[in-house]
Image (cartoon, rainbow, N blue to C red; front, side):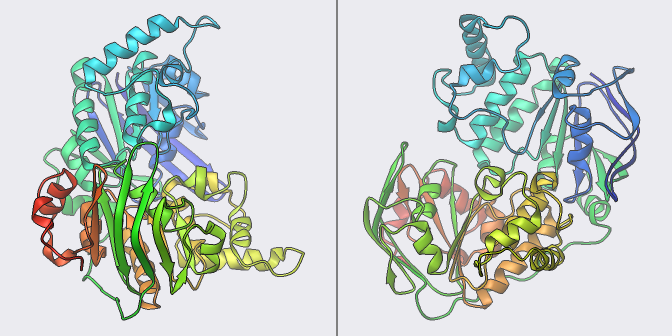
Length: 496
């Protein structure tokens, strides 16, 4: 299906999110939409998918003007969207989520749906059990479920908004293999991203947005340097590695064991120094999540001791950990990190230590203005968090971390952020390290771990490596460990 945007404009107050966008996307192509955070990528896709309406302009599908007023309208026209955060119902079974949005009878034929479900899993090589529950799936598996559901509903245009954020390297390969099959069926893929590497590997052509405007387009082969210039209007450099580790001990783990419904980890030992950064690597679902939650008090270890800054906090609650200078930032922004409906001002007030009975709203506004400026959040103190782009929600989460902190625990800290924003956020985190805070962070981006970590712990199939010095690793070696290779070589090595 061919997609055409004609002179599309969209305003949010004073912000001109889409400024006269005209773009043609041929049928059966994989079109990249590239741009920094807040460039207007998601806004344009939400207009196409019916979540919001343009102020001006029109959309044509196969040369015919259409008016898309809702996601239901969009799917009737054959347009489906996979959002950064999955739109599913975790307490329900996969097959029931699969049936969501199906037109026709009030009571759909579950048996036929099961057959279609199994046919699609076989066609694309997905390992999904229709009778299992959504909350047991990884992020990548939830994406697979949504792809199947949209195909079942008849989608001929697939919009994917930052789909590689928070999934493992193996899941990304699987996703790309799936998407490459779509053009063979005349299905158009619109791949929204800020990751140059992903766009280069997958897309036939790319359109670059900056500050709401279409800056330029490029066909394969893609010129990375030119794309970066179009995205940011300048060259972007990662800069030199920095290490601020010092003497002392922020976190001590002694023979810690944690478990969830999927696996059991045991015998974990760690000494984390002030100012040090340790990355947690592994395929999604390998245990990094339960481990980092055990270090924050959100999950109680089944064995062992957790000592923070000399205080034994084993079995204590998250509130006790917080009082001892520990803060946790989750990957699921709108489910665990932020409160939909509340403004940035209200979030910053809630994050502050309570002083007195009454809320000082004027102080809250000034605080919000300061944090918005410091973290370069594109919004106002009155902006609700759900009105922000995914990248700006991530910056808001980081801005909510209190000062001072002794231990910062992060799940995918640069999730949804462009290169420039990632560099900026890590500069702010490294400032915390310089002040003596230690960081444990989960990332599926191996380059991020190698660039910003001092040491790394790799998780695989219920096993955890001792902390390994970054200087002794390469991307290839780290990838092998994540895939389960080379573990025998570690047995003779000492924990650093």
